[in-house]
Image (cartoon, rainbow, N blue to C red; front, top):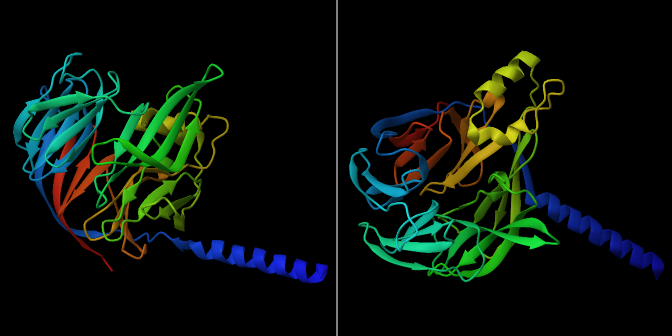
Length: 352
C-alpha cells in the first residue's frame, strides 16, 4: 500500500511538472529588421505651450496630452495641429495639483489628481463635469485602453504604513465603469521604497481578440511575458532569450553619461569596478487591433528596439527606435520621445 501511494505521488508530481512546462513556451527573438510601408502624417513638438508630455491617449480623431508642468490637457488632431486646451493649476473644483493618469470612456475624461487624491471628470470638449473621491485609498492608478465588455482593468498602487514603515502594494485590478475598484486580480509588486518607478511587472496590455492579459516580467538575459485570462487566472508564459552583454569601463562611463531619467533604475545596478550583464528593460507592451503584440525594449548599449509578435506569439522581427513609449490607434503608431510625438501611418511587411 505504501509503495502504491509513493508511485501515485510520483505520478502527480510528474504530471504537475509536465503541465507547468507545457505552460512555458521557449523560443528565440527573431533578429530580423523589419521593412515598413509607413509615412509620417503628423508631428507634435514640445514648445512654450506644451512643456512636458507626461501621458497621452487617442480618442476618436484626436490626441489628448497631459502636461504636468502647465497642469493642463492639450488636444491635437492626427496631423499634429493644436485644437484646444483645458485645465489649470490650483486646488479648486476642476483645477489640477498633480496630474498624470487619465482615461477616456463614454465621451468623458477621468483624471486622477495624485495630490488632491480625487477623480476629476471632464467632457471630451473640455467642459468640467465634477470631482469625486475614490472609495479606496489609491495612490496611483493606470487603466488599460482596451476595455472589457462590462468593466475595466487597471494597475493600482496603494500605500499604507505598517509599524511605521511605508509599504507600497501594486495590484492588477478590475474596475466598475464608474471607476470604483471592484476586485484585485494579481499582485504585481510590494515595495518599501518611498519612490519606485513603474517597471516591467507593472506594464500590461489586453489582447482585443480574446481578452488575454499580458504582463512582462523582469529577467536578466531574457524576456518573459505572462498571460492571464480576464479573471486573473494564469494561462501561460512565453520566454525569449537575449544574449548577456558586458561592457568595458570606458563603454560603461559613456552609458552613464547618456542615461536619461527614464533609465535611472539602471544606475543602482552599475559600478565602474563591477559591471554586471546588461539588464533588458521592457519599457512598454501593447496590442494593435489585429492582435499583434508590440514590445518596446531597452537592449544593448541602450539602443531601443521594437519587437513585434503575431497572434500566436511568434516573433516577427524588430525595428530600431528612439521612442520611450508609443500608442497604437487603428493604423497609426504614435512614437513618443522627450522632444516630440511623431505620428506614423504603417503597414507591417517582413523583409524576408
